[in-house]
Amino acid sequence: MDYLAIAYSLIAVVLAGYTISLWRRMQASRRERERLETKND
Amino acid sequence: MAQSGVAAIRAAQHDHKEAVGLYWKFLDDRIIAPIARVIGVLALLVIGVGLYMALWYAPTEKTMGDVQRIFYFHVASAWVGFFAFFVVFVASLIYLWRRERRWDALALAAAEIGVVFTTLVLLTGPLWAKKAWGAFWVWDARLTTTLVLWMIYIAYLMLRGSAEGERRARFAAVLGVIGFLDVPVIYFSVTLWRTQHPTLVIGETGGLEPPMVQTLMVALLAFTLLFAFLLIQRVRLEQSRDQVNFLREATG
Image 1 (spheres, helix red, strand yellow):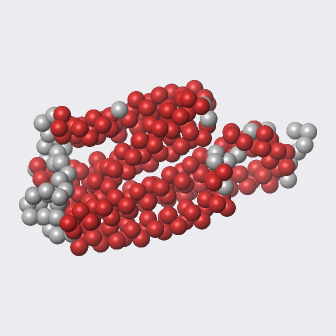
Image 2 (spheres, rainbow over the protein chains, first blue to last red):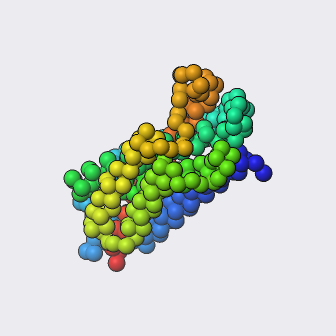
């Protein structure tokens, strides 16, 4: 595998990984907020 | 709580708007969610176009060959990383002045994203260097100062886990301001010291050809849009976490 392919693969993996991690953290926080709001109804 | 339930929490949120409500009015989900979606889709499209241009449209550089194509998104990553740290710098200064949580949250969000993009710079640069210099890493002024910058903001993120509340935000803001001083050092390192790192030359003999410049511009736009999307989402996450913390305290 040449360096060009490695470089663009690394960029894709890092950015996809960070975006997925951010999305999962947002989902977890939203679920927790909804749970706490429901608990108080 | 005398007045139990969500209504009481909402009333309390209204009283403590700055701490537990919206950081800014436009961060209301109904306003920001569609805007973020549009920016996200645009970013994906422009990244696609940028990739096409970087891999096929831009001519092959004579000396380096195909490995030079790393340059387009390497420079775009560096631009976004440095811009993110500039946001940290400004938000930290405003936080130190006004002590409002929202500026601390913005600084944190920008720092995290800045570290991600600087990581990309440090990953892609050595791959180009191996072909150009025969070594993945040399202790060149620009490389070393970029590594130092990355370490400063890793320390910034670690610091946030080591202290609590206002103290944590204050310490982080001071580091966010001081850390940014490294960015102009990186920029001018190629003129201040003897360095192997190439300088960007546009519009002169021996500089980048027009298709290369166009490709670079598209890559810069693509990553700037991605940065805007990620920053919005990261600030929304911080806002949501504050709301959860408040609800936890309010419900006991």
